Length: 434
Length: 187
Image 1 (cartoon, chains in turn green, orange):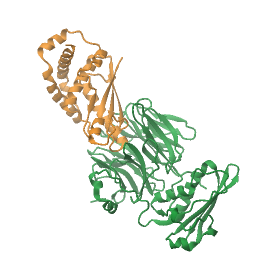
Image 2 (spheres, rainbow over the protein chains, first blue to last red):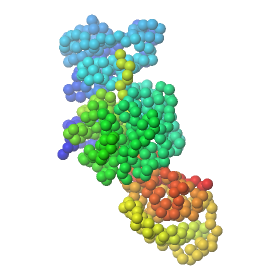
Image 3 (cartoon, chains in turn red, brown):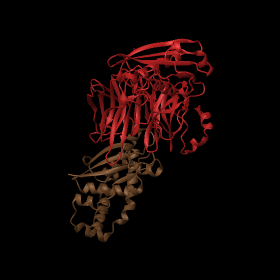
Image 4 (cartoon, each protein chain N blue to C red):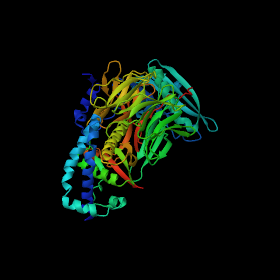
């Protein structure tokens, strides 16, 4: 039995009703057993000539809690509200079990520019671990709060933080007149920006590895076609418009190729397109469904979904050719793979019949761990540091986005967005790091 | 009266179209052979409609225009949605009879085009559902072609789960969403 229910304990605590598809929602853990206790004091802003719309400390708090690594104490329980390390009475924070403390302030620098300062303090050692001062334009305060979250996360865990990145997703309103919108937002769901709007379906966004562009499927001409759009300039071009399916574009790690699906030669097969020359190479040739290709981290192979065995399962194939090798054997529905940046794990949709959950497949051992507990979960996408999986679920009559930690223990819904949200994809790290 | 006449005409043509293609079936792939077998089964059940009296009068009757036939509320081609089982593109007997009528209508009306819009229910991954919707449209297409429609008359587009007909999250809704819709255009 390869299927390991690591999260079983949690399910027992909430009753086993998830197994019988009862309409319950598992409580979302606000922090997990073993999460590091810390506090983030509200940043001082009283010397500013304007009021900040973004609350830096609560953005940091939400980020750190969402990671599952930290448990940030509610600020009503704080013994005091210091803004500088010199004002911190470490003993009091130690007495309430805190290991780390973040203090900070926002100062007015020049016209239109702020100075955001923060300090990460080790409560037990009574010393500063990090201290930064950021010159920040008013409109970039949110991004700075995410950047601070990344620095804190990395200092304590040793793993690069992925809060200051972006996600793309499709928002839809379906009815007599339908609207499909491709959007890009911060990782906490805030700051949504529209990339493209259409009356016909938009699907399957894929980030270029440099984060500058998105490939996606648009039905704007009443049939599926694949486009690439440069985000900053909004310049876009159609890359395929063959008869039949044009779908599932996925960018190669070097950014030079797209894996995609075409059915121009009858059944849907996997192709690789050279992005600059548009030259196509056919990779699979099978009368079954072959779809949802994703590149492995080394760019040497693709993992894709095929129902050649009778049920949809994941297969791996060298891009140089050869015979596809089946890699999932547990369960009758394993699809929509995403590969972790280190190449060690695959997140996928696992299920069949009435239940579709997100599972993690450890490639070396073949072990499968369920990460989610709802019945209509789909579109898993790894964070660039591989510690979280972003996915879509259904709540009432609309799609919502969730993030779950790789151990399945911390699961958080992204802030409520308008519309029916689906197909989230986590973008790469931003390049211009301080 | 016109209605009965139409049904009879359709059935008659349907029988006529059936026989000459027998040889071809043998050369098909296994899948096509199965489809073909389904078609044969479907035809058996459709045959009793062909009553010899009405058949005779059908031949004398002036044919209706394609547009008129499409607008008739009670005609055999009034129903334009084919439903499917979970993760399946197999056309059931009832739908087979309906598609025979559509295929025959297309073969006798060369000025008619159809777009087959394939759909899936919301469960599972979206691109796999695109492929499922496509497979459903292709199986409808094969039947229409076998029935005498020409390749130039048929286009297909799969929308996967992107355009549900019904919005619920239960089998009753899902069964209405796993479908192929026939969208006619008269040139």
